[in-house]
Amino acid sequence: MATALCPGSFDPVTYGHLDIIERAARHFEGVIVAVIRNPQKSQSLFSLEERQEMLREETAHLDNVSIDFFKGLLVDFARDRGASAIVKGLRAVSDFDYELQMAQMNQRLSGVDTFFLSTSPQHSFLSSSLVREVARFGGDVSSMVPKSVLARLSERFADEGGTP
Image (cartoon, rainbow, N blue to C red):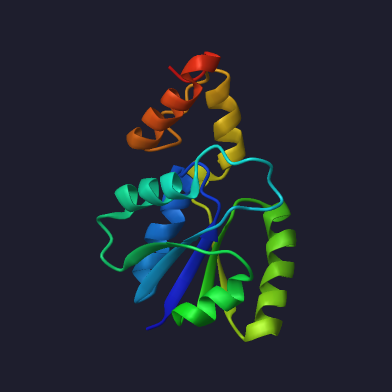
């Protein structure tokens, strides 16, 4: 069996992310959760180290999952780590349009294939940016993120009157 990468910004980690990671872990010998700072997104809410720590806490029960950081091209990171696959979760058709282009470029550059997993229906609306926005304005995100992540969100937004 092969090693796969699950890349993302994970800012913050949601149950949707964890669903994809856990499902990938059932199908691959090893899964590397590859945390990046997305240059297309403005400032991150959590540092790379905080995101790595959250992911380690929430994937500790998965023996074949490791957490790592990367910058640069994902395919270079894949080559350096011996990964032969990329796993991406798809929430909607709009995700597919973007992810298909990325998958084709990655395959062209390196031969690394991308596997798409449809997000479980209960998580199909989740995105880190929506969770951040709801939490920032005091909305209840307790069903969208693990308790440890909720605590971090509450702490981060306490001064703004956000998530209690």
